[in-house]
Length: 422
Ligand code: SF4
Image 1 (tube, rainbow, N blue to C red):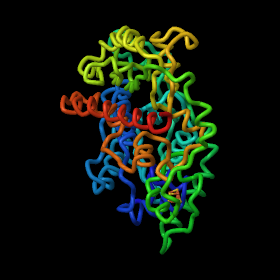
Image 2: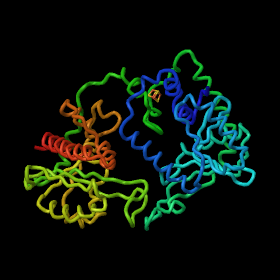
Image 3: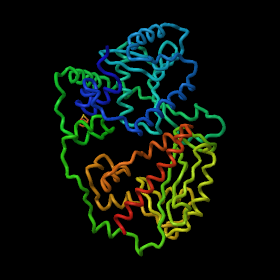
Image 4: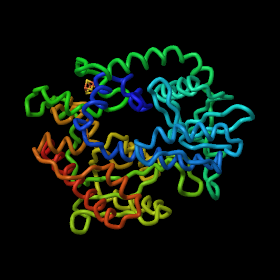
């Protein structure tokens, strides 16, 4: 059986303890967040679509980990079978390190290795994992003509059915991975030694816990860190940021933005933003809160623009909570025409950050869920990104849940604003 894989190698580069825990105590991992699940799912969907660039390949994916040895052997058999032109998820093992390569394409008497990424930019982690894959392929003696990373082309505009040859771009990283081989070899030996330790290595919590990825063992490592269970805030700054003069009518706006990796609608690009739903809470709304969505037909999303222009015109202040710059979003979609004469957006997220709001619950980021815990000592079951994920899953029950979540989130925004400014 293998000791390292692509994911455990990357984990080990981030933190030796995380690698050890993953191998020896995986049950202590935090629950996978909805964002992480969404990201994995997106990666899988984009990866499958990328197969169309090199079609008619044989899928080597094992259905269970126990199949790895069998798949390694089948991969080898396919390498010497001239009838096999393309393999997806070909499985190789070298020096106790196992990899599954997204695509391996016959190229004369050599092979072209391709790894697919569902983003529009290449990061250090992508280069690192390509380097590990090259190390294993080279160690196994697979003759490579090139090693390329395939990723989404941000300039692609959908015009009819998706053209995968335009949607994806490729960049050769052959020179880089060859040059990094000795470095990878050293790391593999170091990380294998970590896994063989009788106890977890001692690693202090620190920046690496969130960089480059949020660590799965955060809950385990940080549980002994004792902090006061109350929030702190710089009230002087907070009050200096309060809306002046006091607005006569306030609305609470919660937008659900959606950025599909692969463009869904004609004329759109990868990750182009659309507004999938919104909730508006205010005195002019029937039953106190108005909810609009186009979950079941995304092509209707532009209807939201006129609706929001009309609805927002009834209020002097629009309160929201979002890490995004909502004014920019509203301007981009021409919902507000001009910030100075347009509606006044009051983003609690930015205000709380500027006023140095802190509570242990927000250690891993200021989210509405953590804010609710910090200010009101309660947490209702909701997650904004879960809405996003489920809203696109064609599951009608989830749509209902998504609508309810939009309202619940808005209520927390309203409660927070009233607590701090009224
Ligand atoms: S939480 Fe931090 S210290 Fe603990 S395993 Fe993860 S990265 Fe390492």
